[in-house]
Figure 1 (cartoon, rainbow, N blue to C red):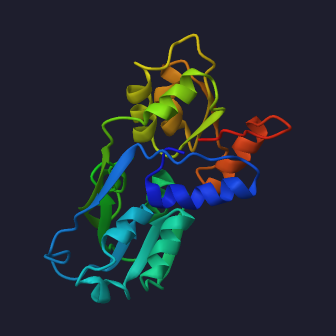
Figure 2 (figure 1 turned 180 degrees about the vertical axis):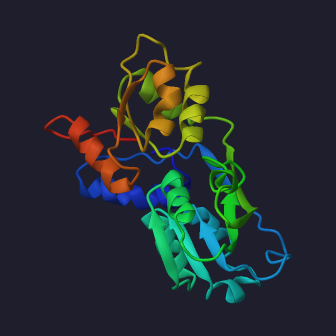
Figure 3 (figure 1 turned 90 degrees about the vertical axis):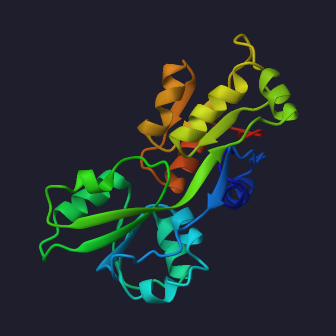
Length: 242
């Protein structure tokens, strides 16, 4: 499990319930740093959250009470759940991914909106550019960043080299890149490689280029990712799912 610790521990519980033995090995370190003034240009017409981490980044922000009642667009059920925990209750749409959200916004039939996109420093795409044909004005504000960790634990590298880890779950392209960078010097090419279970084709891209054994979820959701893991597992399960 290569996710940051908090979501990784939550997913680990689901994996145990499915009979796997998860190892939580965060390859990115989260840093929440929203700007002091989120509404410098005035209160927007709506908020866009494309990750649960963006919601958590503003959990104690002084402007949160003014943002809660605004219209909300999200990507993913986890993001929606995190937003609702903060008190957002005016959900307009929940999209599966950024491309789907752009389709929703480009198809908006009302007047153009001023939207505040609270996002991470590294993103899957530029939502403002993806909706430039619409009448919306989207202002993207970075509220958190995810930095690669400097090293992978030595015992995990040893287990990978010994072929003791059967599967690695990847939720982002950045964790896939981090896995390759941190493991390539320690894991010999002749060792039994794990199966990489990826949330989407974009996530899988660096692993495919590296020649890894890759399975891709049918939808960019955790449910689909875990279903993909189950399909890849042997009848006795994948005991070392990481």
